[in-house]
Length: 100
Image (cartoon, rainbow, N blue to C red):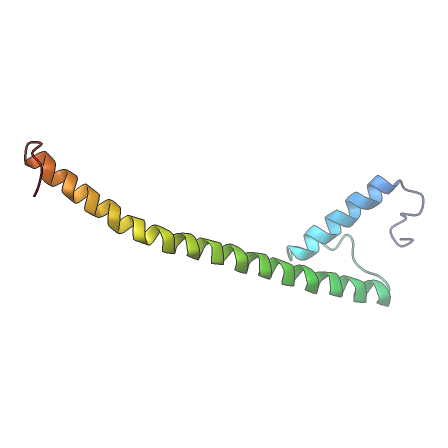
């Protein structure tokens, strides 16, 4: 707090700087304009970064599970759609008569 002279600033600026540091660190950009100074800050930031990576991994795993489940559901429908298109084409070439 004192290294970056946040002591006299308003809480909104401190919040924006904190969110900015978290996003640049978690996205591995890390511009370096804000960085932990003391040992406690380094430990705290390391815990935050490891927790953020774990949460992101869990969210991506859940997202991929949802996509795979939707693809499995669509696979059954795709075969039915193809069969419907086939019979529709046969009916069209049969001049509208029913196919036995």
